[in-house]
Image (cartoon, rainbow over all chains, first blue to last red; front, side, top):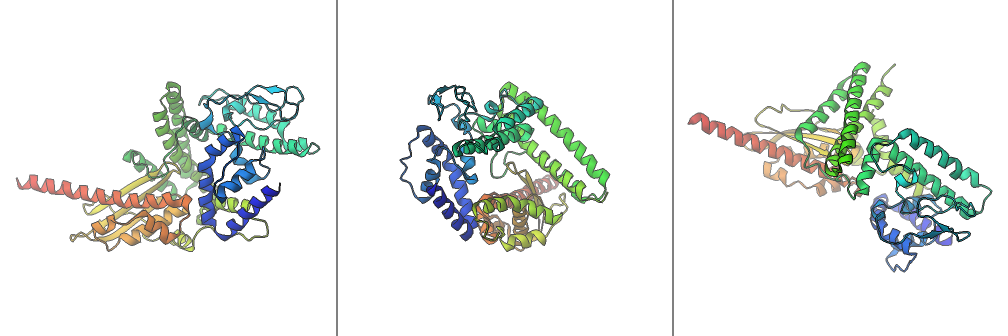
Length: 285
Length: 165
C-alpha cells in the first residue's frame, strides 16, 4: 500500500509539473503493457528498469491495482490470448482449482476471483466471437454480471474482495461498452487479430470517399435548418447500417483486411453522426 | 458550437490529468494558447475553386480519429503560393495545425512549401505527443495539395503540346 501511495505521489507531482511528459509517459506505459502482462503471468517482478517502469511494477506487484489509474493495466491483453502458457488457476482464498474460462466466483468457496487476464471481452460477456452479436443477450449478461459483481455488494466484505469486485465490475463495464456498438466492437475484433487503424494519414484512402465525407461535413456545417440536419443524420445512419452488414460479411469470410477498410469508413461516418446529434441539440426547438 | 467542440477535445485530457492529480492541484489547460488561438480565430478558412488550373487541392483523412482535412493553394505564374485555404473537420489540434499550415505556405515557393515538416508545426503549437498525428495530417495535406497542383500543370502542358501539334 505504501508503494502504491509512493507511485501515486510521483505521478501527481509529475502530472502537475508537465502534462506533456505525463502524456508521453502514458503512451510509454501502454506500450510496455504486453510485457507487464507477461510479468504478471509469470508472477516474476525482477525488473530492474528505470523509474517509470519501477513505479509501474511496484503497483502491479500486488495481485490487483486498487487505484483507478492502474485498472486499465489489468484488462485482458488480446494479443496474449493465444499464448501457449498453461492457464491453470486456483482460487486465491481456498486454493481449489478453477476452470480457465472466466469464472467470477470460486465454485467451492463462492468467493470473488481476480479477473482472468487472458479472457477476451467476448469470453467475459459469454458471446460468440463474431461481429453479428446479439445485443439483447449482451445486455442481459451485463445486467446479471453487474448484479453479482457490483462493489455495493461487497461493502461488508474483506478489502481484497472489495478490490476484486471493483476491478471485475469495471472490466465488465468496459467489455459491455466495447461490444455494444458496432464500431468499437469492430475495432476490438481487429485488435484481437493484431490489427489497428493507422495513427497517421490514410494514404490508401479512396479520394472519392474522402470527398464524400468532406461534402457531407460541409453540408452539415452550413445548414441552419433542423430538417436538413436530420436528413443528413438519417442518410448517415443508413450508410452505417449498410457498413455494419458489409463488415459482418467480411468477418464471416475471414477477410479482415476488407473489414478494416470498412471499419475505417465507419469511423468517419460515426463521427458525422455525432456531429449531427450535437448540431440538432444546439438548434432552437 | 466552438466552445462545445473545445470542451470535447479537452475533456479526455482533463479527465486524465485530474485522475493523476491530487484534488488540491488546480486544473491546467493542456492545450497551448496558440492552439486555442488558432482554434478560435482560424486563419484562411474556406475554399478556392478546385477546378481552377492554378489551384492545388489536398484532401486527407486520419482513420484512427476520423478527421478530414482539405487544404488548397493558389499559385501564381512565378511558382509562388499567393493564397491558401483550408477546411478541417476534426479536433482542435487538427484545426490549429491546418490553420497554421495555410499561414506558413503563403508567400512560399512550391519547393519551400514542400519542406515544411510536421515537427515544426507541432513545435510551434506545442502539441502533446498524443496529438502529433494532427500535425502529420497537416503536412500530408500540404504535400497532397502540391502534388495535385503539379499534376494539373503537367496535364496542362500535355494539352498545350497536343494543341500545338
